[in-house]
Amino acid sequence: MPTEPLPRPACPPDGAVTQRGLALQIEGLRLCGEGGRQLLQIPRLQIAAGAAVVLRGPSGAGKSTLLHVLAGLITPQAGRVLWGGTDIAALRDGPRAAFRRATIGLVFQDPLLFEELSAQDNAALTALYAPAAARAEIAARAEAALARLGLSPAGRRAAASYSGGERQRIAVARALAGDPAVLLADEPTASLDRANADRLSADLIALARQRGQTLIVASHDPALMALAGRVIDLRDGEIAEAQHG
Ligand SMILES: Nc1ncnc2c1ncn2[C@@H]1O[C@H](COP(=O)(O)OP(=O)(O)OP(=O)(O)O)[C@@H](O)[C@H]1O
Image 1 (cartoon, rainbow, N blue to C red):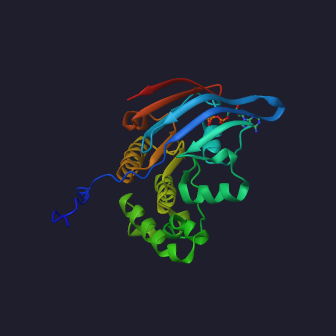
Image 2: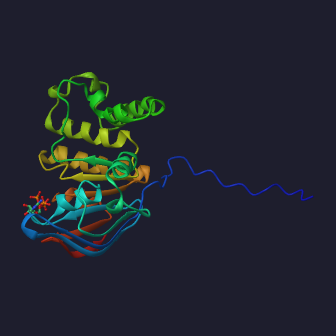
Image 3: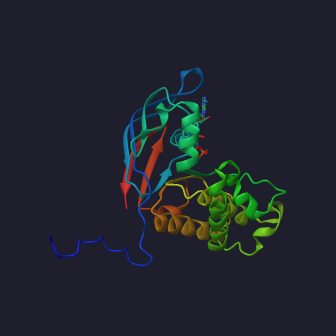
């Protein structure tokens, strides 16, 4: 009988990043809109798990459309959109929605809040669709995210009473409350003043890094680009250049 103790995995040091993000792989993506107009043509794109990426491009380049495809909200005519091995473009409606709920946090340019509900209830909104056992955890994560984003203990006021910057932070807290592997954000700082945009950019990148989430943000914001590990240029629905930071 061996007497040596079995080797045990080391605990990660305090504050270590947990890698829970998913890698993205796009192959042969083609999306056409009304009238057969080409909206996206991306033969190949890879984004590493846990990467923080800014999607940049002029108005109409296809940034929002690509985010919608990545979230499984638009299905392309051709190609594969693999999140860690799951092709979201090939899933049927039900499984696709379930995959999105379990895996992807979305932040839109418009925070899309329920004005009568408190910041906390807005941030914990996904608890409504979650199994009963997960609801308390989502509410706790929503509260923690609001606090981390500087909105605690004021999270009990109705959403309508918050400023533009605060509303956008509530939307980020809502996306984080589900502890998604992937965070997709569409121009989250576009309607904010410089100070609020800088603060939200720093928080978004720091929180995603801390949680090991894969973050893809469509943005023109230089603060976000400076903080992200990679900037991808999109032009007329095609990737023009990918720059690694
Ligand atoms: N279903 C559709 N049919 C036809 N054209 C569409 C469809 N959906 C989007 N478009 C067009 O595709 C182009 C890309 O739109 P998209 O919103 O993705 O651009 P964007 O890069 O996010 O721009 P912005 O920075 O202004 O938000 C636009 O010209 C838009 O009008």
